[in-house]
Picture 1: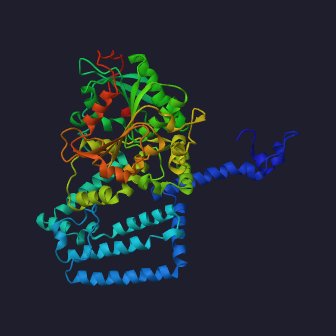
Picture 2: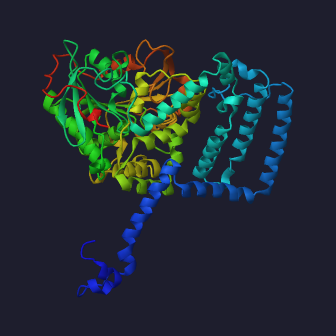
Picture 3: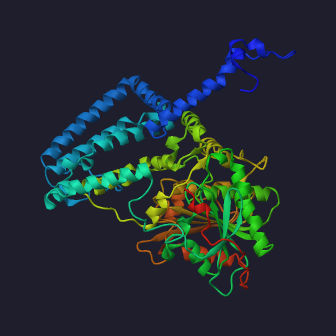
Length: 586
């Protein structure tokens, strides 16, 4: 500390300046003690997967104390337990008394319908039902706390699911008999290899899928670079193109090539083939040196800088903006700020699984509270970033049966090797988040919902989505747990203009990577003209037109109708070959 030595710490008066009150001993010591608390919290985070133990205890205390203070509620739960016990006795006689939820795939194998496994999984489902009712604290328990308690209880129950215990899982037992126990050493080998990769960060063999080799291979050039982004311009494959280029703003949580996976399912390659000049932002993988980058830095150094660079290549033509996930939220903020400032460089805004109102932002809200965010700030203070492994852990906990337990059963209990695919390879190629930006994003959007409420500051002034006067094309996905489609649909409440909304089958990633010819794909489509009355999402879902196939051609038809006559493509600027260098940073 400048100007402070050991004598100052012993006697604050030693540092006195005439006319200035000397610092108190508490003031002198507080920063150092605060740093120790941050270090302590960072250590805690390694044991709690980044969750605030105080936040968890507060949630459970809220639920437990209200339950203690509700004797008749406890009596009701006791009665329900007796009923569940009777149903369990019926299950023991061979009767089928309970069905799993439609999305629960744990007990779909026919072997689960045979004794004794039928009774085991029925008894477990009955116990899950009781705990689901018990964790509902009613109106007395805070909504967020009730969600945390319900989530935590589900995580604990999953540990004891018969599907996750090899000696109670008929599929594992059958495989053990079939292979003469060979699945056991095979599973152990898979476990040791996964542990080795986690420690070293290096796979045993060269990956089949890698950016710049088998993924992100659509030809193009890096035409602009700053401290945060590389802007890629893709090579034209048609003799003529629409005059309005497309700017893709991906999320910065993962790498941009989710939209340029393999050649057969690359949305970017598809757009180029439909006669568009496509530009895509590739975000830098930040390190501690970028810890102080803000949300507004991401706006100015990201889409605003990209629009300036596109103008240098294509001239003064409007641009179709397209944002995916958080990139769509950032694009919405950018479009609102541009509309506020009279900047008319956008021709349209397309949002792919992107939220603009965060009141119903899905299960990620489980990790959003003042206590949790303060804890996370301390965790990020140590390195200046949030590591991708911590983000991945949060997403895995949200879908533990699909992303953790099912893979553990397949790889470690059945001894099978999971075949990699392009989407899995992309999902494993994570990025870090700068501390300041990530804290601002979580507080200002998820916690305080500032964008929807008109308080979000961009460029020193608030922005409002009602100012945007260009048409919207918005995609929601049916099985999205990150950006639930009902939440995505709320853009209708924030902008009175033209909005075309598509609800596609699939989840947050697979619903977007939905190329023509992909089997079992369908979507619903509806439009809202400027001035039309509001239609709530459930009513919209009933009345919207349903179509089979991919939504991609519908989107390009929509863009065509809002673009000018075709013309020769603009020059392809000089620069390093796509995918550039930022996407390769680890």
